[in-house]
Length: 166
Image (cartoon, rainbow, N blue to C red):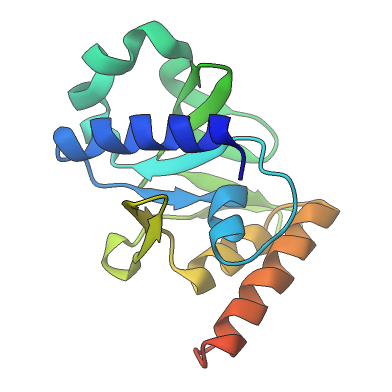
């Protein structure tokens, strides 16, 4: 993981912890923590929609999008996108987010379950990471070879640690 990601991660986690905002790391960075080797582009976090306002004063000057509802062919989520020292950070709503399922042809709610987070130590800070099986379920709804790579890496993590794979 490059220094730019580590610096931005420490910065945003410190803000979230100081303001007592629940969160979990998701996406490619979470997959990286579970063993994926592909390049990580951004930092994706889920936070409760009603807690966005708690951190706005500290992040306002880094906002490039939002807070607003973001909707495209795949996502429907309350979102704030930040650029902190050249590193993109996406803060997505934790409970009302939806992904479009191309197979079932409908929107699928993907609420975060903070009761299942895994706390991992990364560069001397404790980080809340999405549950491995929840990450697999979410990545199955996305497209791209990197999603398959991430899913396989997370499955290997679960098997290596003798944990159940959904």
